[in-house]
Image (tube, rainbow, N blue to C red; front, side):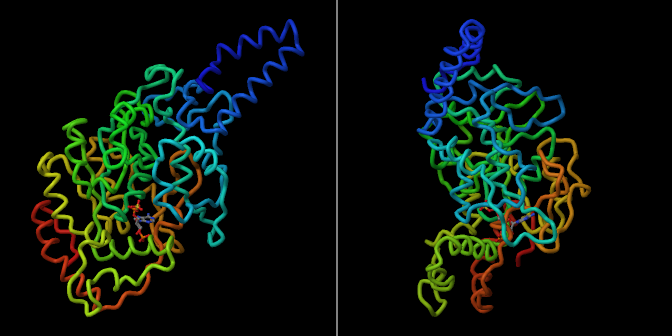
Length: 412
Ligand SMILES: Nc1ncnc2c1ncn2[C@@H]1O[C@H](COP(=O)(O)OS(=O)(=O)O)[C@@H](OP(=O)(O)O)[C@H]1O
């Protein structure tokens, strides 16, 4: 129902009568269009399928497809290169999350440009939200009656063969956006949160979210919270025991501060980092119930994953090296995924203002782009003693993690 009834066949029927009775036909066409827009504005997200109106864009082998245009145009987003100086809304964690019931409306709403006042030296801040949302349109909305079958477009929707499962604030967005420039990678931009929050929607729902891929292309998604979700490994294993798992890890102390900085940006009245990190102010016991601390105990979370997947299914990416040597780290990632090494140092430049590597030519754009301003935020100053105390706290867990992964990340 909904806009799903507005199939191209029906539209062409109107066009036929247009020749015979131009005015009546025009009126009918307008009624159809109004009905269509009404459905869109009143929550067609889960009812109608833009997919049913979408013209599949042929994708040449060896090239990744970009946004599939819709016939109506109503669901088209500005292409990322058309939108200058955009950034994420401060509540970026929420925005990056795919809310199944609101996907289309979100897409339309968030497609409007937001200017970054502080964008400097001609660098356009790179809205992962916008790039993401362009691709959010890639996936047909789940459970949409009247939708074209999964194989009616070019390519098909597959379960991801590789997932970036963590860690929050590790550098997961940078990794995904870097990977997207590879012609054999197609990734969902938004975080679907299927294996933690939306599992009851079922696997078909999940698969429907994915972009179409051709033979030889890899489907990917990233949801950093999977790494700390006890049920996630078992659920992913049930989907496919061959899933490749990528974990971007970063010094747990810096990661905790980054996590705190993000929450602080949304809740300025948040207590100090120190007040949250310690059970009492004398810096005695560290409060491991605080998620910003708990997430950084990587060895513990990894133990859970190893109950299901052997180590060979994992790639641990250094969040620090992803910043200092993005091409080097991307080389490892491409090897792990069995991809040709297409992403090299030619693709990156270091943006001094941003203080991070940026892409010379991101996918779908000819212009250099950096990640949005919610990535690479300045951190608040934290007392040195406190930092040392935290470093001490994490040391044994870090050692265990190095031992488990066979990789010394150099945090100690
Ligand atoms: N190239 C590039 N540009 C900008 N930022 C970069 C880049 N590479 C890694 N990082 C680091 O990524 C940190 C955010 O991590 P995530 O993307 O995993 O965050 S999230 O969990 O999705 O919210 C983010 O953390 P903060 O510095 O605390 O903002 C960055 O340090």
